[in-house]
Length: 422
Ligand code: DOR
Ligand code: ZN
Image (cartoon, rainbow, N blue to C red):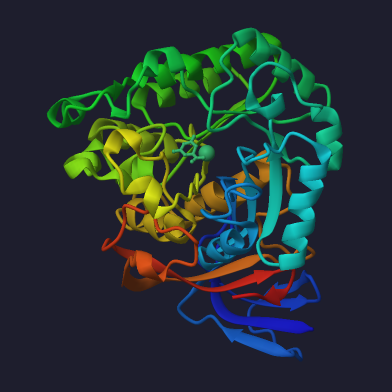
């Protein structure tokens, strides 16, 4: 099968940003990239007016299978990811049972291969049952296909446990992803501690609860000489801690999510549980700092933290509502609209944040459009304006605070292993 993509503007993370090129794909690989390819083909996509990007890669999502299939499963989650332009996603292990053993790693791969859509890479737990007491067999789990290790959803509370996890993972170049939160400082907080929490009469989660843990983990990585990836950072000080650590040569990488540069704690007004997420939405000053961090490379990637929840878990009093929002189908258009459109980032930088760098951090041979590479591509029309409509989402859940938002950027086609799957 030979697929020809004609007249698209090809964007890679580095190099020329505006490059009109045809792309010829044969079987699973990119065979040829040049102007005006006239070779024979079986199928042609006219990408005139569109950008052709390396397939988007999400390093942090929750697919909920096994155990919470009423929120999402691998079938619905990969359909949602595909419609968001993602060709590869890494899913977190806070399922039931927790993904802390080889059988479940195999299960995730088998199930996603049967479905044969967006590629799914399981992240295994750092501790058995995410209890922070016993390390998982990370070495064997990596051999079985675990792409990284995280107790996400919860922090690794003990510093000594985290130190041991980092040292163990380092022996086989494993990656630990840290959910940074000092639980003792969060107490019973349900949103950012500040003006809005006072107005609403809700208990707050202080920024320092995140920042202390970011500092701890960065220092532990520095002390042990190991690498670490910090999940979903949300505050100015977290950005500063990582910036300084990078300047000292610490092997730290970091991610943020679209909600931390598009929304603030104000979204929780009227007790809007759709804006309840952990870490919580912060202030406009934090949003500015997150954008600065994305601009100067302190923050390496944008991940969705796609966290589906059932309506019944959101249609309750704010304090009782589940944390999290779904993100696959809004990540690209929000990032384009809030970062590229106002001129904070170039398209090339956005591709770096959503494809090239996630691939490097997860050690995937993906994230670039070059001859000889696997043909995972996302074709987008950034001129198309649309209104986000949560009733149209492919996800099983609809817990998104973005209903009615006007954005730019429509996912036109997704090509995975040379096949047009969207
Ligand atoms: O808001 C969140 N939801 N934060 C987390 O860390 C976990 C996630 C979930 O699994 O629902
Ligand atoms: Zn998460």
